[in-house]
Image (cartoon, rainbow, N blue to C red; front, top):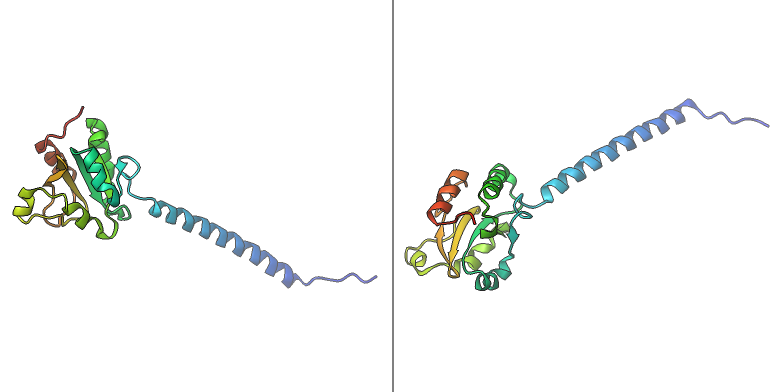
Length: 169
């Protein structure tokens, strides 16, 4: 019986295929982990009570005095701010006072502007910033942190919450 000799070239091709498969697997795992990290919403999405835009009306009927953190949950440019804000909220024990509304693709402005107080409507003040803090009293938005497009800063938020009487329990 003749033994068949497998050329060395076939072994090299097999080894290269295994090495390539290992690299592709590693790349796909890394890509999956990065995509998963960025598809996870805002850092505060799971921290605060989250209200969907279509539930705002009924939420404000049940909870007429609250603070709304309005942000795009897929915008990771504010991760540093959100980490600092979360720490501030924990230190001051005001988590129950604040809710989170995802404003992905700026869909929330019209829904929320229905709840503007007469004072803000008379002054033509609207919600213009993607990341903003809104104070709600008696079911109406009575104050807005940013009335123009500014980057959100923790010092501004702390001063704003203090002025509006949001204090720890």
